[in-house]
Image (cartoon, rainbow, N blue to C red; front, side, top):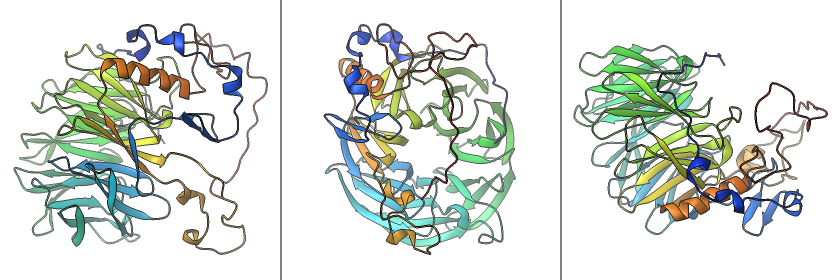
Length: 455
């Protein structure tokens, strides 16, 4: 992975929840007894993971397929669909959001992040990943039916394309697809399945999002730490906007004035002013502003009236909420605990609920019946570690500020890796209050263990 210098605009901001939640520190003390519950498993009100983090997800939990990466919600708010791209079984899960139940799991050879409905939700387009194709599904009454596919090139391994993000441009009736091997934007006619344009971009691509007017598309380019703007009339790159490292999921305001993108490699989200075509803010979504990179903000959405931004921090198992009602004056509101590795967050304005896909679900487990070295076995027939972690969906009622404050306290209680927060001291923490460039006195030895991580 390439390293990129950090781009810090004039309006760079550091925002974090602690400063905005009065009195939260008094209830955040942990006892030695609690910290010494070292065996992974279920305890009173939480699950302890092998890495020392706790899970106490908000809302109602629904089991879905392996490693959900993306999610779309129907216009009426009745169904959600996730693309599940685990090491074992790849699939799509349809969840009835009224009854909190998975009503269909459709298995496919391969899928990845790309997922988009057409305008009336009668068609669903989904990435075929390394198979270099786009699935076309009919969608009716909560059921997906595979009807066709669009092949972007020769099937792998003959041609390296690997379809990542997708978006349907309603007023032009075109389908946009981007890739992480050929580093390109493909313009497709979904009716004829013809590829009408191919535009080379500056690096590996993740997501593509068109504005509501259908005049521009924006691509998060992993490999260039940028958002590339494409004019949809001339199909040319008109701007390359530098953002944080590893930009991924995006959302655009309904008036097409601002674009928000999660920067997975440096704990931030960038705010882009679509009038000036420049990054106007950079929001720190970590638990505290001084912690090292590793929160992995990888998904992002707005609430119904677009005053609150929600960021999924995958490697810290929470959502970070920010008040973005005033331009360039973002304020932190608090955190919401999720399941293990939240990989997609969406807001259902019909029900005022937050829907979160958790990539690793709710718990870990041992695999004594797993694969054995030297023995040829199908991982579907044994406890293959890549398939033991089942994805879940969390359906969360949008909280008021009092409830959010309590959720924020729970997020801090769930982490073993936080420096001093006012009066709260976590004896497991090795992060100093202030960075002095001197090694922590708590670290006596470092053991580097190299172990193959699947068996």
